[in-house]
Image (cartoon, rainbow, N blue to C red; front, side, top):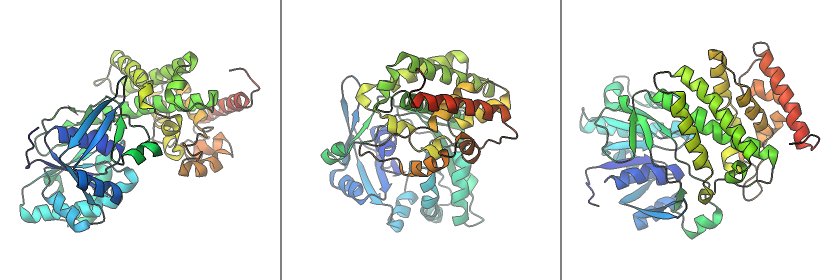
Length: 408
């Protein structure tokens, strides 16, 4: 492939999504990809090799060699700012908590760019599974820019829907090659067509949409919701399940997951009637269930279900769908059932350790589902009495099921 040296993507985050998805798409689309990351070992290795492998996990593994890449340590603020000033496009794949930390250096790069030329817009792809990512990141950057900086003219904040599944890399796989990353074949990046200040890059895999909020919610309330439901129901059924495909091989669980996703689809259709039909969402759900059962991907129940403080929180996949259903006066009982099962989730990683913040979650959950509904789910017993009563009845059922006092 012939690379155009004028095309440069600066990408914050050399993690799994950064390398397997965003970096891969742009490198194969003819861009030089400059990774910005805190991990010195990864950055050093990128600069030694200038390439890495993405292993596509399916019936037969496929190796994609991603070329024309290099790295810069995020601590080298001056160099990072210089890279931003000369970038064709910027991307961020670091997680919501880190977005605030990179805002100062992004602002510094924008100012360098502005000093060099007053009319050189920069589009920033926000490769985050985060609702309202654009106003969130804008709010983090603006304090570091002068009041007269023409942000609306020069900065495009491009929200995305990240549907690619990338499993946790086992220690043995990292030891073999620190840069290799596993991923599923899916390779479609949905992004906000309306937010670009420059022309949308003409590379394979980009799928611009006019109403990005609908597609972000589809990812959250269908894909993420279905994933979490499978993990939580599967863990209740058998805490020894390791892989997600094991869970979905149980017909009753697979049907329950599908029905929960269908309930969420009804909510989405009511919220976005101009963007989705039930027919198209049913096709999407069945495709997702097929992808969830990819044995070669080796996706674990732990990865899919952990981080309960976030995944059971007010606006996330399950509670967020319930809140939306309540606004639309639609059923949410299946989704609430999954949410309550999540309160009992205690899966551990390959070393037998809980996800760090799950330790804090368990201390709350031990006080009962009411405590979690109020402190994490954002519900009020005064307002949501019926919801609380149903959740507490599910809590009793799940407790008896886990205790072996009722049949599955």
